[in-house]
Structure formats: structure tokens, C-alpha cells
Figure 1 (cartoon, chains in turn red, green):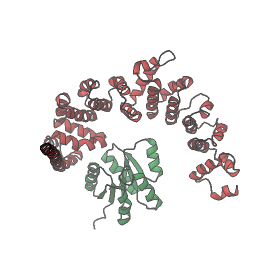
Figure 2: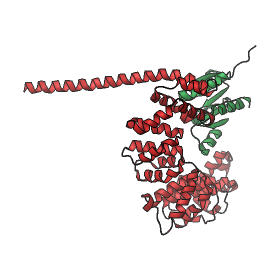
Figure 3: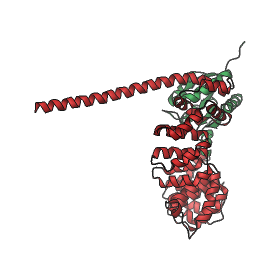
Figure 4: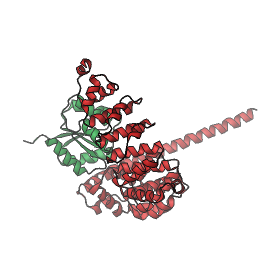
Amino acid sequence: MLKYLYYFSSALFLLIMTIVLIIITYHLLHKRRTKIFKQKKEEWEKFLFQYLDDDLKLEEAAAEMNDSYFYLYDFLKPYLKNLKGNDFEKLKKLTKTNKMVDFFLQKLEKGNREEKIKAAAFLGKLGEKRALPLFKEYLNSNDKNLMTASIWAIADIGEQELFFEVLKTVLKESSFTFEALTEILIRFGEESCYQIKKFLENNFSEENNLEEILGVPDYQSLSLFFDIFGYFRFVPGVEIMVSTLDSEYNEEVLIHIFKALVKIEYPIAKDLTPYLNHNSWVVRSQTARYLAKIKNNDYLLELKKLLTDEKWWVRYYAALAIFKLGKEEVLIDIVKNKRPGYEMGIYILDQAGDLKVGEVESG
Amino acid sequence: MKEKKDKILIAEDDQSISRLIAYKFKKEDYEIKIIEEGDKVLEEINSDDYDALILDLMLPVLDGMQILKKIREENIKIPVLVLSAKSQEEDILQGLNAGADDYLTKPFRPDELLLRLKKILVD
């Protein structure tokens, strides 16, 4: 019995020692890497700043910054992310001249998994089109991280020809949040709106549904598309949104349509009363918001009714709409006579500085 | 006699960016101080005579929008230029409404930042 206890404690001791050794080694390696990076950063920083400020020629800067490419990538990352225009172009020239782009193109093809992912992020950020065939291939990779890095890289490059390929890939991947999906598609730029519009014109009708092509319920893809239209204030997309309003029963889609219309600020020829009385409070509030944006005075009565809505946001947007439509006298009247909804009237007028406390009390 | 240098406070938590801005501005003969945490900004403004503040909105501890509101609430007259990755129209309007004198979105051009800073200093 004692013998087994001895073996067991020895094995346990060895295991603990191995774990401790691994932790120490990892810690030392990390410390060493951090130290090297810090040294390199200090060294490179002055050359980079001089180069960006035209105090150092491209070739000279490239000669000073042409080693330890993975460290260099970490060093350049914040500049690639935060600079634009001429400064960004200078960074592109620098990374071409110092052979960093060639290095990462090679790593993208033949590196290990981690190297490929880093290469994808770097080449995507630089808009390096030579990497596109590999990015396209990696869209089908079993490695989710490599696939995701390739998706972002293609989006960063904004390659329109791969737009739908990326779209199908991201839609079938459940790991992306709706916000991430929107962010990816937005990176393709406004041109993607024309692609979406054409796609919807060809494939979305009473007879056809998008699910067969895109593999997700129509409301998901439509919500995403209309979000993109809204982001780019894409007026040519309004017509499709209006025709969707005619046929669409899904409130998720309605919400995205009105949110997009609020951003686009384009008037539509349609009776909006049903949406001001919709079951979904988000649809009601966004419709009120939209009326204010397009300066439409035709629904004042409905807006006044919404001042007593059960949802705070609906009351808020209704009162704000009345105010923004230039009808503050309507709100003042409601407040002074303590008519239904006067509390929100006070809130909005107070915010706008149009109301003195005494006015309500004496009203 | 040498003219007094304009003193600029940069509140930015990304060292790479704040140091780049500082490099450029120092060449233009500005005096620069960098702060990385939001809660130190007000203290710093009150402790020294700054001519302008370059303010990132996403700062740790206390975010830039709160700082901006406090600056204006306390009626501190310092010109503020917001430099932020928040680039939606609503964000810009919100920043300007809160009392920013100018708003520049990231990614940005350091030359443009310098020109805009010069403008708010003159104004």
C-alpha cells in the first residue's frame, strides 16, 4: 500500500514539476519576446516617423526596417489601422520595398496556421490583390480562424467579385453576430449595394425566396441587406424596401427597413398609419423617427396618440417628431393643459430649452 | 524674445498614435503632453495651462464623451479636438453637441490633424 502511495506521490510531483516548468518556460519566452519587441519598436519608431514626415527616403527606411517581419507586423499594425491617405500609401510602399509583402504572401501559402492567419490580416489590410486566390480557397477551410481571417481580408480588399461568395460563407456560419456580418459587408463599400439590389431584383419575388440561394431564412438576409442600404444611404435601394413593405409580414425586416429609411431620409409614397399602429413598438418608434427625418406633417394626429403609448421610446420619438416637425406649439398646448402624454412633452421641451418649469406649474 | 510655445494635451490610449502625433507637433514647435487614462485628463487640464486638447473618445477609466461634458459643465474654455474611431454621423454630431470644437475620425491624416488644430487655436 505504501509502495503505491509512493509511486502515486512521485508521479504527482513529476506532473506538477512539468507543469511548473512549462509555465516558467512560457513566461520566459514571452518576456524575451516582449523585450525584443520593445527594443525593435524603439529602433523602428524613429525611422518610421522620419519616413512618414519626409525626413527619410523610402529606400533608407526600408533598409532599416527589413528584418523580424512578424515583429514588424505587430509594430506597423496600429499605423495601418489608424492612418489613411498619403500616410497609408507610404506604409504600403514601405512594406513592398522592404519585401515584407513578399514574405507574408509566402507565409499565406506555406506558413503554419498562425502564420497564415497573421499573413491574411496583414495582406488584407494592405489591399494586396495577389493574395485573393488563396483567400478564396481558404473560404472553404476547415480551420474557422483561417476562414474568418480570409473573409475579413477579402472584405478589406473590397473585392466585388467575391462579394456573394463571402456572403454565402458568412451567412451559413453561425459564429458571426449580426453586427459582425454588417461590418464585413460594409467593408466592401457602397458598390456592394448595387450588387445586392441587382440580386434582389433577380431573385426576390412572390414566387422565389432567397433562402434557397443563401441558405438562411429570408428575414435574416433581408435585414442584413437593408442595414447595408441604410449605412450607405443608398437611395436606389428605397424602391425595393417599399415593395418589401407591401409584402413583408416579418417585423424584424420592417424594423430594419425603417431604420434604413431613417438614415437615408428619403420620402416614400405610402400610407404609414399601419406602421405607427404596428404591434411591434420598435416599428412604431422608428416610423415616428422617420416622419421627423423626412419632415412629413401628415401624421400629426397619430403622433399625438403615440404620446400615451405604453413604451417609453415610442412616446419619446413621437414627441421628438412633433417637435422636429416644427410643431412645438402642439407640445406646449399638451403640456399646459395637461393633456394625455404631457409628461413626454415636458421632457422634450425641457431638453430643447423651450420650457420653463413655471410654465407647467401655472398651466 | 522667444514666443511662448502652444501647449497641447493629447489624451489617447494608443501609444503608437499619440507618439506619432507628438513627433509631428513637436517639429512644429508645440509643447506636448500625453495622457492615456481618461480620469487624469481633467486633473491635468486644471493643473496646467493648456492651449488645446486632442481627445480620443474611447479612453480607459473615463470615456472621452464624459470628459468633454465635464469640461464644458465646468466652463473650462480649452479648445477640444476629438480624434475618434467613432465615425458615424450621429457620433460626430454627438461630439460636436457635447462641446467639441472639431471632430476628426480615425483613420486620419496627421497633416490634417495639424491643420485643424492650428485652426481651432486661431479661432
